[in-house]
Image (cartoon, rainbow, N blue to C red):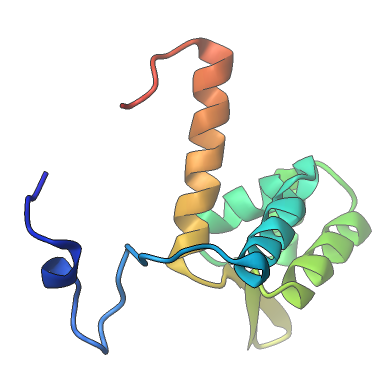
Amino acid sequence: MSSEPLEQSRPGPDAPSLVHPVIPGPELLETASATLRMLAEPTRLHLLWQLSEGPKSVTELTAAASVPRTVVSQHLAKLRLSGLVDTRKDGRHVIYSLHDGHLVRLIRETINHADHRITGEPSHG
């Protein structure tokens, strides 16, 4: 662990950072809560976990989710409207991806945390 002050270890203004020192006020807490509410549904969380592995089409997500395509599409619409996923066209297909790296890490840590609780594996201090 570095003993440098946080301010010295932050990247330049154009580089993304992994650490954002903030004091959570009401607006930030509500936004964070809204994100967590979107993760609190098992099918949506599974779709997000699939997208944490990389961009995928509705067909790919449906095959992995074991639910009807209409259910996948409804969940993807909610995730898109909430700003958690982005879309792009690839010919006739719509490709979905997670909005940013924060979400990738959040999804993976959420799944890993659940795995530790179920398996009894010790947590990482």
